[in-house]
Image (tube, rainbow, N blue to C red; front, side):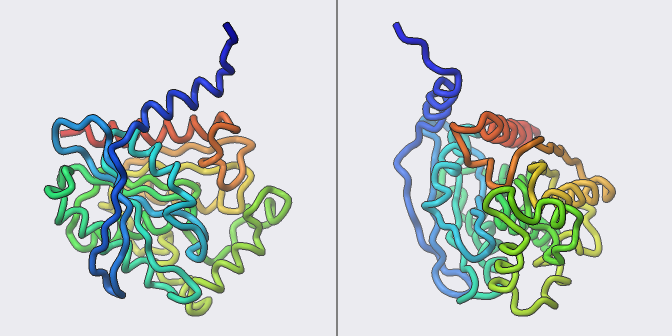
Length: 286
């Protein structure tokens, strides 16, 4: 009998965990027109399950429900939660703050319609990577400011937290470290924001929020060799400084977008499993 490679075994385990009910798409009226959600449910479900509202990456300009479908499936299977992946408006056709408005509207819709989604409105979290991590952080701040929906966890994977683009990692990893360069971030900023002045708005740069106290607990993951590294670490430290419970993990030697590089990269699965475990702990609390 041939012996399976350890990474293949991990992939098979992930596929088994991501055994889902048929995926469904729904439209709901948003602030700028109908918003599409792709909904994933765990296969075996005997009671209302937790819900995670997921915002894909892509610099607020590219990316889609399809490009991040595998991550969403794994998130659903690994957390045993319903996942609602949001097809939010993007630049340059729809400039800031259109994406923010759509993402918060999606959270409110999922919360209000939880019973019809076989989900528990008391156990909701948000998750996003890169630009999606930016949106998850901003949505968590909006939820705190609006008095709800109450979030159990905000999961931020190499998030964009400051569109000032001025941290040391922008110089250290400006080019030669994969798909996300400093020049690419300038391009994304210019296609997303109405002007560079928007970078001072906390809804674009959540680290510039006047007060982070009272926002949902967080898990923040960064890649060492990533222009976004320092700003993600700064945001984790700023949350801690405001009294917010934070789990922070830097993955040494990793580059931007590694989170989705399953099965080629061991730490991609390790990072996903870390996120799944954080959500399960958050949802298990009374």
